[in-house]
Length: 299
Image 1 (tube, rainbow, N blue to C red):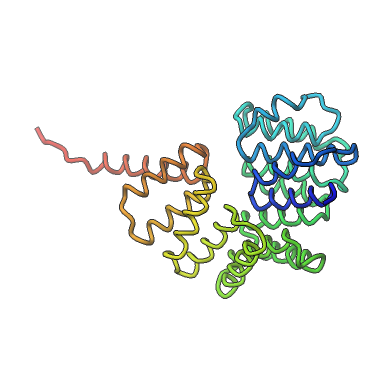
Image 2 (cartoon, rainbow, N blue to C red):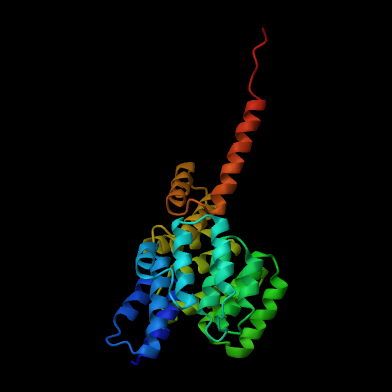
């Protein structure tokens, strides 16, 4: 197998969240020619970041690297490690994106958009992604639009992707994500896509959660639970799997102790998740209401 094919296989494993397999493939390339060096290094760094091994990137990439892609991947690792404030990240990111970044190589655009998405700024992420017609940028644009509750615009991009390369994994995953949001009969189509992709590849947290979400939408909660358990076997700290397990546990009548255990695990692996912020706000409201209804003793 030639280097280009190995990189493509590694990239597909990265997309499916099989990060260790991605790294295994990249590390197995015996001799890396100069034309592939940057592509391999950047994908390697992204896989390490996905595994929360931020210091690998921080220790190996220079702040003054001549290529913006490297400085962006370094900024992403520092963002996730908590090294910068939100304001510092935005300032640094905007400065980097003003440089001469080629739309022909979408890596820098995807990393920049990812940083904006981590800041809950999908509109800014979209502006970055719209500079390229690459399928990966299109797929991330679909995700941004769905976060903004604009399924109508996301559908237009999916149709465009399907006209380019309907059989590509990226296009199929974007289609499935859209179908889950559209609901109704489309949910079954999404479920079929995730199942077919799993048959062609190995199970991953992404594919297992996709199937589980579809099954929950179809009211088949009991069938979703073993898929989520399998996802947690692959990655016990996968926050999406834990959150989906909370939903399934509620709908299958699991005891409160089970729910609290999953919530505690989310706090351990993803302290800043929006679910926890919402939960804490509800707890505070409940505490305030409880105080207002506390029994008073008249003197």
